Length: 99
Image (cartoon, rainbow, N blue to C red):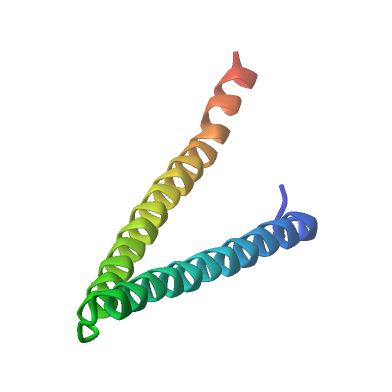
């Protein structure tokens, strides 16, 4: 019976989580900058006040939030299913040994 988790597994999980967070943050920042730039370009071409710049930036922010939300939700469902499989794994192996 193991009381402590494997340190190598902890390093792999924490490294991938930080890489994933950094990647998502970069994607959000670049997406916002691109939509901000497109909006600013449209406003400049059309001679309007910053209507397109604000609208496209808000549109991108909402889209990024929804994308991160659904990604997080899917990841949590996967982890919960994995945890449930791990919690019941010892029950199946114990029954086989008693026969």
